[in-house]
Length: 347
Ligand SMILES: Nc1ncnc2c1ncn2[C@@H]1O[C@H](COP(=O)(O)OP(=O)(O)O)[C@@H](O)[C@H]1O
Ligand SMILES: [Mg+2]
Image 1: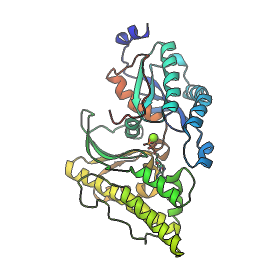
Image 2: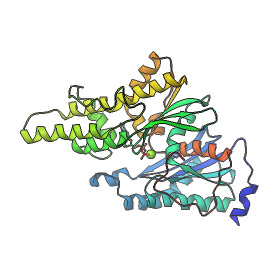
Image 3: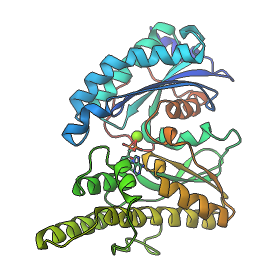
Image 4: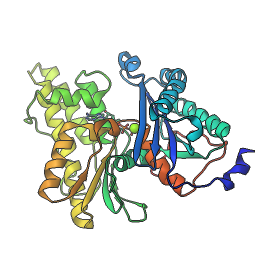
C-alpha cells in the first residue's frame, strides 16, 4: 500500500521534484532542484479559449487541463534532461482554485507518485506565489517582508527566520488583482484584465481623482472595493451625461491609486519590522508600474528587493516546486486520499 511507504520515504538533500499546477487556466509542470534551481518550466495556457466569455470558464479550463497535462509533464521531464526515475517527489497544487481544474492536477500527481513510489507533496497555491522569490535569489533566507498581490489575495506578511508566516494585514474586501479585473470590464477591456489595464494606462495620465483608500490609516489593511466603485461611478456618470473622458487616464489614475498604497505599506513594514529584505509574489507583481515603484522606493530606503521575473509572478509550476521543497524538507507528505480544495489560504 502507498500509505505504508510514507513513513519510510527518505528526505534527500538535493531533491529533484516535479511540480504540477492546474488551479486556473494554466496547465503547468516544472522540475525544480533543491527548491532553488529551475531545471525546466512548462506552461500550456487555455487563456485564449476564455476571452470571448470575459473570464475563465471552469468547465473549459478543466477540459483543457485534461488534454494538456501529459504533454506539459513530458516536456518538463525531457527539458530537464532527466527521466521519471530521477524524481524524488511529486508536488501538486491542491488549492485554492477551480475545483474541477485542480482535480486534474491532483489526480495526475497522485498516479505519478504512486507509480514511482515517491512522496506526494500537497502545496497551497498562494504559498507557491510567495515562494517564487526563492527561485530568483540563491541567497534569499528569511527573515523578510513579503508583499502578496494576487487575484484573490492582498497581504503584507512577515516571514520569520523559521519560515513561519505572520500576516500583518490583508484586504478587507476585494483583492488588488480582482480590482484590476473589474476595472478592466468597466473600461471594456478583454480578459485577462490586469495586463490590459496596464497597457491602456501607459497611454494615459494620472489626472482623474481617486479615493485615498487607507493611505496612512488602517495599519497594514487594504480596501479596494471603494476604489473600484469610484471608477465605475466616474465612467457611468460620464457616459450618462455624455461627457468626454479618457479611458487611458482612468486606467492610469486607477493603477496609481491601486499600486501606490501597496508599495507604501510594504516599505512601512520593512521600516517597522527592521527586516531589510522585501519579496513580492502574485500576478499583480508582473505589473510594470508596481515593479518600477518598488524598485525606486527600495533603492531610496536601502531595502533589498527580490522581485521575481514576470513569468514567475503569474501562475507557473516552478513556484509550486519551490514551496513544495519547503514542505518536502518537513516531511509534509500526503497519501492517496488527497483531495482538491477550492479554498486554501496560507496554510
Ligand atoms: N500586468 C499586470 N498588472 C496588473 N494585474 C495583473 C497583471 N498581470 C496579472 N495581473 C492580475 O493578477 C491576477 C492573477 O494573479 P494570481 O496571482 O495568479 O492570482 P490568484 O492566484 O490569487 O488567482 C489577476 O487578477 C490579473 O488581473
Ligand atoms: Mg495564481
